[in-house]
Image (tube, rainbow, N blue to C red; front, side, top):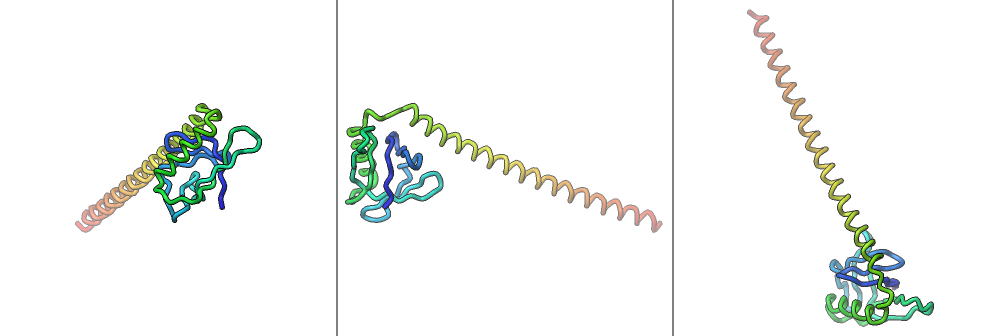
Length: 151
C-alpha cells in the first residue's frame, strides 16, 4: 500500500511532501477502494481514507485511502474538508503557488518544445521541396541541352 504524506489540498491539486503535486482532477477509481492518479508522468495508486496524525506535531497528515465506496469527487471533497479541518494551520499558499507555477512552467516548456519541433519539421519539408524543385530544374536543363545538341 502506498502511503502519501499530504502537504495541502487546493483547487484540485494534492501537494505531497514525499512525491510532489498530484492532479486530483485526473484521478480515476480503479476498484472499490483505490484511486489511481499521476505524480508527474508516474502512475500512482492511493489506497483511501484514513487519517493518522503525525506524531511530530507539525500538522502533516498521512492519508491511506480505504473503505472507498463513493465516487471520486466525493473522495476529493472528503480529503479537502478533512485536511482543512485537521491541518488548516499548515496551509502555505506561497509554496502551493510555487508548486503550481512550476507545473505550469513545465507545461509551457513542453508546448514551446513541441512548437519548435513542428517548425523544424516544416523547415525540413520545405528544404526537401526545394531540393525536388532544383532536381526538376536540372533535369529540364539537361533535356534542353540535349535537344539543342541534337540540332
